[in-house]
Amino acid sequence: MRLVLLGPPGAGKGTQAKEISKRMSIPHISTGDMFRQAIKEGTELGKQAEAYLKEGRLVPDTITIGLIQERLTMPDTHNGFLLDGFPRTKPQAEALDRWLDGQGANIDYVLNIEVPREQILIRLTGRRICKGCGATYHVQYNPPQNSGICDFCGEKLSQRPDDTETVVSHRLDVYVEQTSLLVKYYREKGILKEIDGSHDIPEVTQAIGMALGSDWR
Ligand code: ADP
Ligand code: ADP
Ligand code: ZN
Image (tube, rainbow, N blue to C red):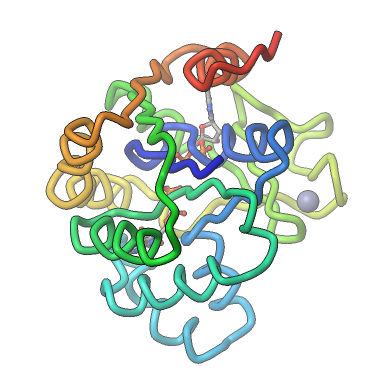
């Protein structure tokens, strides 16, 4: 199955993506994670992307589209994939459609995770991440067993540099201006599934399962 997760920053895309990816045995492809990895490794891509991530602006389409196309040629994507954080603009969505069409493939479903803005702010300011293994936590809603320490690899947790209030507020504006129009784009294609992301993590996972016709109880 080829899936896309849509929704504002902090909606819970990454959290749900990890679970869906495991249950459906399809790779979780997050452009945000790929950029952060490249920045950490100091690659050419990392150097190009760094300032954009820091300020909460979108990395230019040509760079982002090239990155995703390269990723989608890898053999682990042949039975499907789950895109998280891509596409984020109309040109990205169109490029993805053209590229898949060229392979005789298409996106099966787009899951649009909706969460009210007040809740998003609480989620993002309380988000903590592990730089060691990429796990995501929330100080209140999804805390690690030992405060500030990753359950999986024991690293100290940190806050993403773009999860400060000013950058978050800018990222939300960018979402409204450049990404939210993709809801209409995919609805018109008849592949959009609306997911209420305001419930707790397992409930949202279950709603996604039901939308996909999987029995995930
Ligand atoms: P969140 O999980 O908060 O939605 P991401 O981790 O998906 O954020 O993205 C972090 C940053 O990476 C974005 O603010 C943007 O700078 C960059 N980025 C990620 N995906 C894209 C994309 N598809 N197009 C352009 N920039 C992107
Ligand atoms: P996104 O990838 O859409 O930016 P994340 O999956 O990183 O969002 O989630 C943002 C923050 O909210 C994280 O700290 C995460 O632990 C927390 N979170 C995710 N889903 C829920 C939920 N359903 N209820 C409460 N908190 C959540
Ligand atoms: Zn870890």
